[in-house]
Length: 268
Image 1 (cartoon, rainbow, N blue to C red):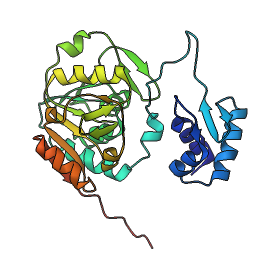
Image 2: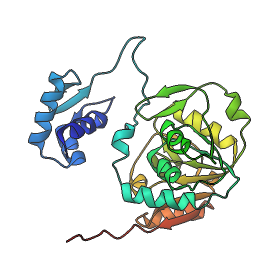
Image 3: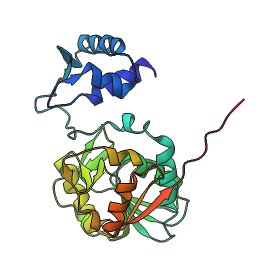
Image 4: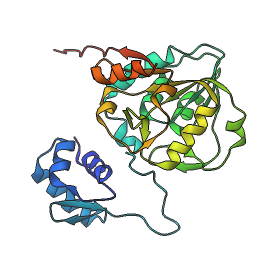
C-alpha cells in the first residue's frame, strides 16, 4: 500500500468521539505498530491529527466555512478499495434485475456504483444521489439521469438535503437500490441522521427496496436504523454471509440472493 493511501485510510479510521489506538490502526491497516506511529507523527506535523498517549484524535473542522462531513462515514476513495470483487459481483446481479423502460432509484455508494457500471445502454429513467453514478451514466444516451437537489458531500460524492425536494417527491420508481453501513437485526444501519433521513425519503418513492451489501457488513455496527428488516424486499450479498444472518433475513420475509465471487486467476 502506498504511503499516501495509508495516510488517507488512517485519517478515515479515526473515531471522532474517542482516541483511536495504535493497535486498532495497526489491525485495520494491516501494518506494524511502528509504521502506524511513524504515520501518526507525519500526519501530526501536517496538521491532520493530534497524537495522544497510545493513539490519536482527529482535528475537527470548525467555523462557518468548514466543509460538512457525514458522521462515521468513510470517504468514497477509501470505501471503493474494500471488497472490490464482492461489490462487483453484487452490482452485476442487481443490474440484471432491471428491465428496459423502468424508473429506478440508485442511492450513492461504492456497491451501487458497481451496479450502475453494469447496466447496459437501455432506456432507463434513473434518479441517483451519487455524482459518480450520474457521471458514469451520462455517457449512455438512452439513460435519462436525474439528481435531487441538495448539498454536495465531497467525501462521499453524494447530494443530500434535509428539506423536501420537488423532483424527488414527483419521481416514482419500481425499485430503490440501497447500500448500508451495516446490517443487523434492526435492519439496514447508517451512522449519520441526515443520511437516514434521505434514505427514508427515497424509500417512500419506490415500490420495492433492494439492498446491496457485501458479507462484511454483517460484522459491522452502526447506531441508526434506516428501516426494519421486513421492509427489505430483496437483499443481494456474497456467499460468505453468516448462516445466522441469512436465517434472520428469511425469517423477516426477505428474499436473499447470494452471488459467488469469480475465482482468482493464476497468472504465470
